[in-house]
Image (cartoon, rainbow over all chains, first blue to last red):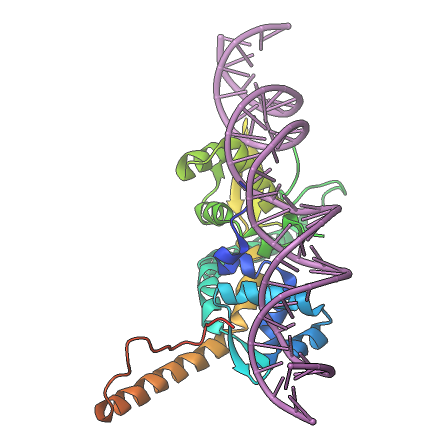
Length: 128
Length: 128
DNA sequence: TTGACATATTCCCATATGGGAATGTAATGT
DNA sequence: ACATTACATTCCCATATGGGAATATGTCAA
């Protein structure tokens, strides 16, 4: 198999940059498809397809208005994503304090010891 | 073309359920690959591949420990996602109040009018 | 009904994945 | 040096997309 279908959940749906742009565009006001096409400079079929995905996962709502269809972001459907990412908040706060502490320690150390040689490593995101 | 490469950004990386599971598992403690394999009941090569993707977008950090490699979630890299989703917070709050108001209005109305027939629609996530 | 709008779908195609199996590689023990 | 442990990569393959072009569908105006 390959990746789970895009239409299966909001995480997949927002993985697409254009879909995120559409969600942002429709966040505060209803807009017909054409407005999205113009505003984001995308092809109309492309927008329709993205809207289809977004609707399937409940990220946007639609209502007919004459010959047009007005779409609007259903912000509530984004909430679970916000909550999932929020689970990590305390960790990045920890990391920030640690970084700060390291910086301070280094600062203090730098007063006595000259800075290390150029090739010194730091972060750890290395290979092999 | 197809979708942008998974390795291009955190949004794509977290679109995978297993990768989210790995991030959660590595959030509070460093763990060797084998621990992930056991804990999440995945194939080792599969875990390595997911870790590769996560590392490429900076969502996890790695450090060698003898013959093992210890991975840990880099929570800071998740922060942008939290912030993006947070942009919609005020909107879903609006919606919640609206839903509440609708519910109350309906309640009040229900006192005078009997409930509608069984096939009645509500949300608006319809077709055509 | 015919024609113009506004959208949605379908076709075809190149590419991105992810899984499974097999294999490569680094580090440690003897 | 050799076997073992712990991971990473590569190959092959089925499937999921997304874009572009063409076409279908739905709605309103004459």
